[in-house]
Amino acid sequence: MEQIELTSATAPVDELAARLRAGDERALEECYRRHGPLVRSYVGRFVPRDDCEDIVQQTFFELWRSRSRLDPARSVVAFTLGIARNRAIDQLRRRKNVVVDVSQLRDLVGEDGEVFVERLAWAADVRRGLDSLVNEQREALELAYFEDLTQREIADRLGIPIGTVKARMSRGMHHLAERIEKGELR
Image 1 (cartoon, helix red, strand yellow):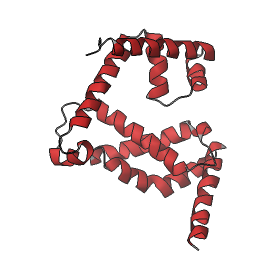
Image 2 (tube, helix red, strand yellow):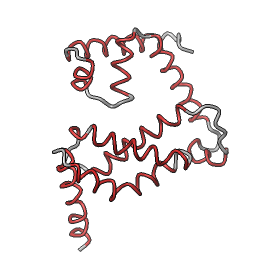
Image 3 (cartoon, rainbow, N blue to C red):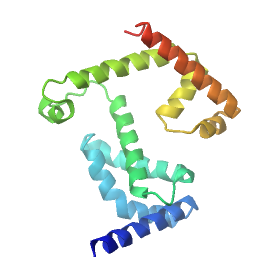
């Protein structure tokens, strides 16, 4: 009985993803109605309440914009929450001088915070490495890793051949690896 309920609960999601992918605007409205509260609750864990509604709107705008990447065989909820997570991270990166209560971070960083600090240091190294690349290499890597675009989508966005995208990404990754191995980014 439980299996039947699970199957029937996932069927509308697949149908909704297919409708979204086909460009049905009513499917976007339905998705917003159905999943908007979940997205709002999810991003509320990361960003201040004042920013939640903006991020929810950005999330569903991005869902519509990137609907061609939807796979009707997969959960539209997971796809949407992935977008929401990325928009929340973008929002947090834009904020400056934010004071965060340490007790709220304890779950994220553990008792001593060592792993978290290592991740921050690594992220800073990667950012410095990206900043050291030529613009074309940095742009291709940022589109791939920060905007989650495929190489084909990058080529289309930049109006260049996919081979050029591959070459730029390869050279950029090679340059980053060399700089990290040599300890030049610290």
